[in-house]
Image 1 (cartoon, rainbow, N blue to C red):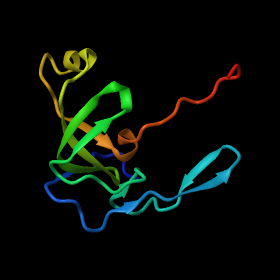
Image 2: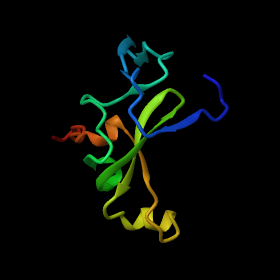
Image 3: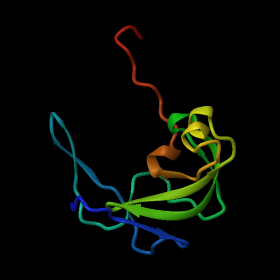
Image 4: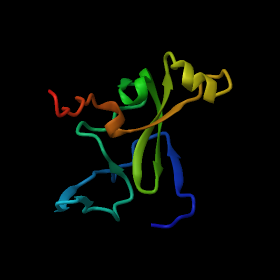
Length: 118
């Protein structure tokens, strides 16, 4: 992929979005099989509609409303208005409530990895 900025925003879900397809490459990790697809969604559920209420589990961001879509380097995401930004995020936004750019996996609840002592 190009190292140049590759970013676009959309007010409608692109019709040709696809789910990211992963395959095990070897014991060291996974390889993205549909790397060339221009609108890959990383979530298990379909992308939410504009106006949908979602929960961002990443970094404790919480409740948000979908405003529009974006694509960066082939990855489809949603731009959301966060209901109540955590303090660290307000600080990053200089006291403002900046919209959040979220990918499909950010909207999925994940269980913590087990530790050696569990």
